[in-house]
Amino acid sequence: MINRPHHPHTAPGTPTVAHAMRPAVVRIDANTMVDKAIDLVHAADADHAILHAEDGRCLGIVGRAQLAPYQTRSWYTARTPIRNITHERGPFARLTTPAAEALATMRARGLRVWAVTDPEGRAVGVLTPGSLRAVLADTDRSMGAAA
Image (cartoon, rainbow, N blue to C red; front, side, top):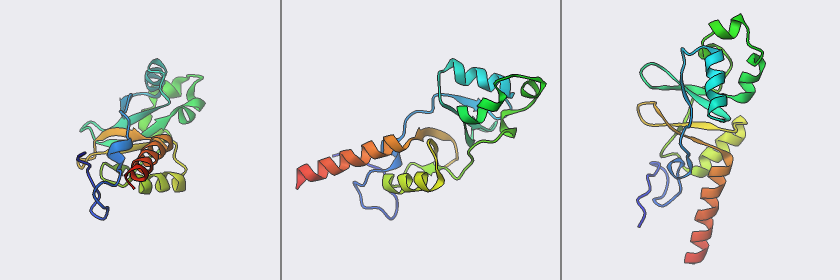
C-alpha cells in the first residue's frame, strides 16, 4: 500500500500535490542581479526559476516570459535584483493539497508553473498542469481497474 499524504478534508488515497510535483531545477537568491539570473536560467535550459530569500523561504517563480524584456542587457539588468521584476508570487501549493484542487487553482490563476512549499515555506518542487493531469489520470485508471 502506498502511503500518500492527504489534505485534512481529503479522503486517504486521493492524489495530492506531493504526487505530481517535479524538482525545482533552478533556484536563485532574490538578491541576484537580473543579468546573472538570466544566465542561470539559460545555462540550465530551464523555463523558470524559483526565487528564494536568504533564509530559504520561497518568494516566487520567475519565468522566461518575465525575463524576456531584460535580454538586451543594460545598466538596469546589472544593478537590479531579480526580486524587483515582475514574477509570480504566493500563495504557493502545499504538499497535502489535493491534485484536483491544485489543477483548478492553476487554471483559475492562469499559471503554467506553480511552486510547492513545505510547512516552513521552502520550495520543494514545482507543479505544471500536465503533471497534475497525469497523476489524476493514473488515479482514474487504477480506480477503474479496481472496480
